[in-house]
Length: 97
Image (cartoon, rainbow, N blue to C red):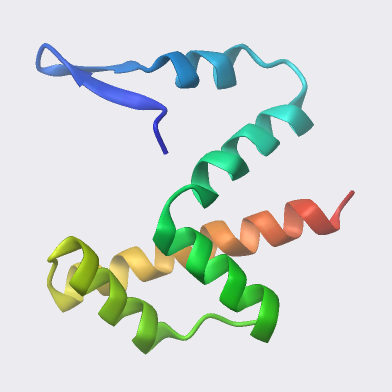
């Protein structure tokens, strides 16, 4: 999501990460996170699919993850669950306005 970067065998916040951390308004902080999440193609595609069909096709998404990131099935399955959880969170957040 662009919040953290590797630096000297460690990690640190990126300038965007510092911006998110400094934002005091939780609503605006969440909007920043959502925008960052949806910049990633796989999240954006899953978001659109969820918007249209109220679900995400697991098999299609896992295949897409394997193709895009050259990962095995087990890792793709795990990442699918992460993607699904983030998309569900986005919809919960946007429907609570």
